[in-house]
Image (cartoon, rainbow, N blue to C red; front, side, top):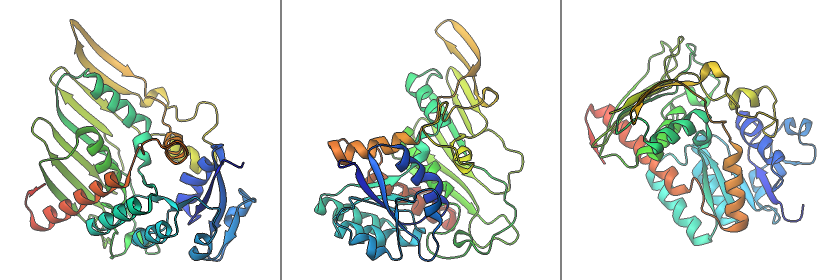
Length: 348
């Protein structure tokens, strides 16, 4: 207990309840010490040892807290990260890192000045399907990759007026939500693009912010497209890869979020394993052998993010998702908005 990282959680909504608290509890190197809930006491049911505070400032004043998780609405990320860093805390911030490049540059500089870690929660790097795609690309089983297409689609044909993401304002819309995940994955796989071409739209009748994105990250040898929409009732492939020797097609989505929503714990046996029916299909030529068949999906492992964060704080290891990489996602989002609004290619 003495060497655990005392952690404060800034919200106990969906993000805190599903994506953070279960992992802090399951990892022996973290201790969920404080939870900020303005009026409710929802965290008490599952985490009775965590103290509930009624203000962010109250949490920052706790000298024993080493890590603050900023999982509040996107428009607060800059301000809350800045205050936590100034208070001498390490910070884990939800994606998107900030709303603007300027804010991101300021925060990365402040973290360096304060000698504190600033990590961005791009947990979808630990989706089993993405990990499998990354392995296939690294091993070159498709030959030279020429086309990559990734989707994050849902069916939600009604606008929820009570959700801030559905209302006009800074940082709202699908591009900052699911788009940030897909852009991050593309940057991990292919690096910085030469240019960006994007189409952002409002497809739902009552929509007020973009709910559809189609972003092309232009590279010399490979066409990279990431897409997402809320009017996809019959899901198509999640990943489509074509290369000089073959193709890989993957349907379905990583099961971790659904399991967490149902109350399962990340330390349960078989965590992150995908059902065989959702495994992707590989059709390729390996030396003189033609292979066509299912490829078992690697088990997803969001805990890998927290293991890395713990090792970075306690043992000085390199962060898996440093703020600089979160900042690159914001740069691409800004370029995508510029491209869509001006109907043009934006050079990067």
